Length: 158
Image (cartoon, rainbow, N blue to C red):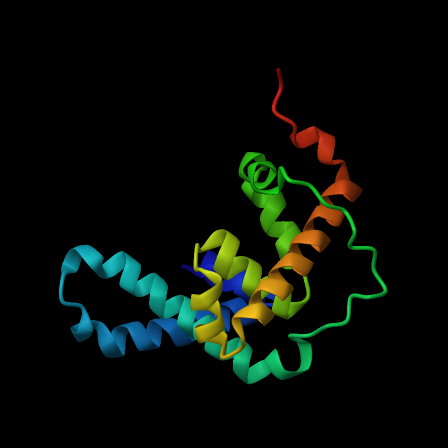
């Protein structure tokens, strides 16, 4: 779970703070778990919600709509999802960590944790269209960064 916290944080230290806060919540609310088989997903959900709350308290208002108009985000590909699936996890997490906070939050929620745009909108208290727009902008930035590091090295051989 520390890895999940670090993915959502700006720094390793923030990730540790989120982790500690999340596990305090886990231990205080462990009695809520009705089925022991669901404990893993329940803990992950608590961790993600704690990371979102931390983000909302510390950076959301300032950084959700970071202006990326000065950067070239025009790189497009229809093969985006399969490209991401073929990449080394450490490489993609490193690239995601370089995104502005708002973009990183939405990419983590959608691409890594599998939440829908509507679910993300509800979690972050923003419009569904804003989530979609931020996700597409973040995706363009990710693809630009992939291009910069040599996208061809992630092609599937043969």
